[in-house]
Image 1 (cartoon, helix red, strand yellow):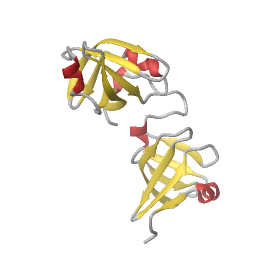
Image 2 (image 1 turned 90 degrees about the horizontal axis):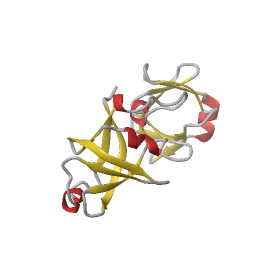
Image 3 (image 1 turned 45 degrees about the vertical axis):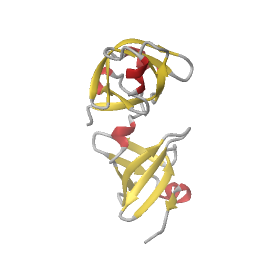
Length: 171
């Protein structure tokens, strides 16, 4: 499993003292406040301060002392070590753990592998199978089980065929 997980996106500097405004990508925004360190563009920063509002978090990082230094981080992904993050709730998974999972029907027929996950109210899984790309919702009734340790997702064939959408040309 990947040892770092993308937890936020840097939006912009906040103020003149080097604080950055980030868009959290976690189920609970408050989890950002518990991180002792983050990685941005391959560099590890100690988190000196963290606060949240309803939709955003604001981080003060060691070594980012002013607005100019914070500006250099604009648009970058914020990663955290897996061990610094809480375990996902029952039935929830980190996106990075779902990508690459083989998808098959309940009878065991292979359908492809998850190439991407598009965040939405019900996440949309992008399934790659050769030259074909399908999109389907990660919804109850479609997905029967997910085993990230085995990198395997089982879908209900009939329901999958009802909701899956083929992207591009079927070559």
